[in-house]
Amino acid sequence: MRPKKSRSSALRVESFPPIYRADAQVLILGSMPSVASLEQGQYYGHPRNAFWPLMAELFGLDAQAPYSKRVQALQEARVAVWDVLQSCVRPGSLDSSIERASEVPNRIDELLQEASGVRHVFLNGRKAEQSWRRYFAARIDLPTTTLPSTSPAMASLDFAGKLAQWRQVAARRSGPLG
Figure (tube, one colour):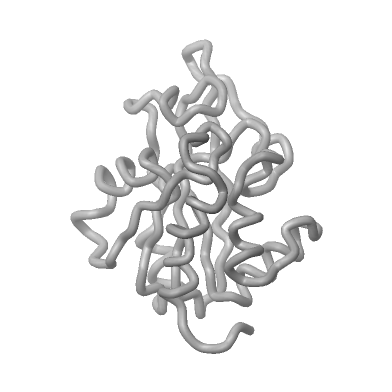
């Protein structure tokens, strides 16, 4: 999906459809795909984003496999992925550049009806947490955990530090993979 020009000089960007199966047990929510992700048409497409390497550590998937194989591996691990925001005006890739008045949330409540086994929501970074609180916390009664952002802009924590906290995702799902 290519970004669209809005009334302002900034671009209106739109998120991707969710990655999920009906038997998903955990949901990972980001804020909005980066410019690199939008250009590639893939979640977490920036080469320095830690998301896929973290998923490789947690679920044994190949972080270098074709995107479709990585998506399939997440689905088999019963992990759903989406963004809190469906669209927004954001010049560049930084969450701090999102124009709050332009935010349109995704229909996460509808996703959770289809994937009714989701029992925990993980928020990938502070912006995802802020948007979740603004749009969903009062009406969706699920436990949430905010994790350190996988973005390369979140350089204050190294990979090992992120992995230690992201291990909670694997701990919240149960049963064999597949």
